[in-house]
Every structure is written in C-alpha cells, then in structure tokens.
Image 1: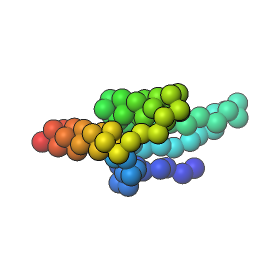
Image 2: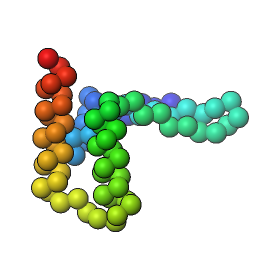
Image 3: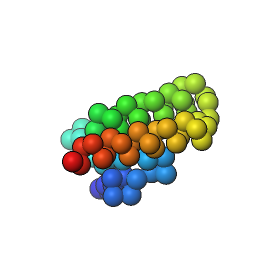
Image 4: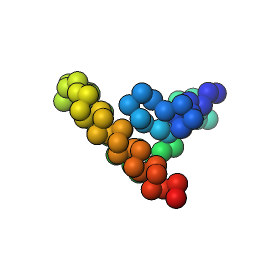
Length: 78
C-alpha cells in the first residue's frame, strides 16, 4: 500500500491531494483521493482540458491555476 502525498510534494502544476489505493474484499482495486473542493475543481478542469478536449494546457492557463491555488491556500491557512 502506497500513499502519494501531493500536499507535501505538490505536482508541478500546483495540484495538492493525498492518493492511495486499496483492494476490496472481493478483489476489486479502488483508488482513494482526498482533496479539497478547490483541488477537486482543479483536477476536473485539468482532466477536461487534457483528456476530454485533447488540448494541451498553455502556460498562461497553468499560471492562472497556480495563482488560484496559492490564493486558496493563503485564505484557508489564516
């Protein structure tokens, strides 16, 4: 069992969460992701941009998302 700690080690794009995988009693693997509402929104947007629309996110968009994360974290740590 491994835990990917993207809070301690954020992804390059600013995404932060905890990910782990477990196996249910019936043998089915399940991935568990623990993240804030903001990070869930981030992940959904990036997934749509990268995989659903087959677009490459440009640096401008990445910078906006990184700024959003920094502001969100600052507001919620105070």
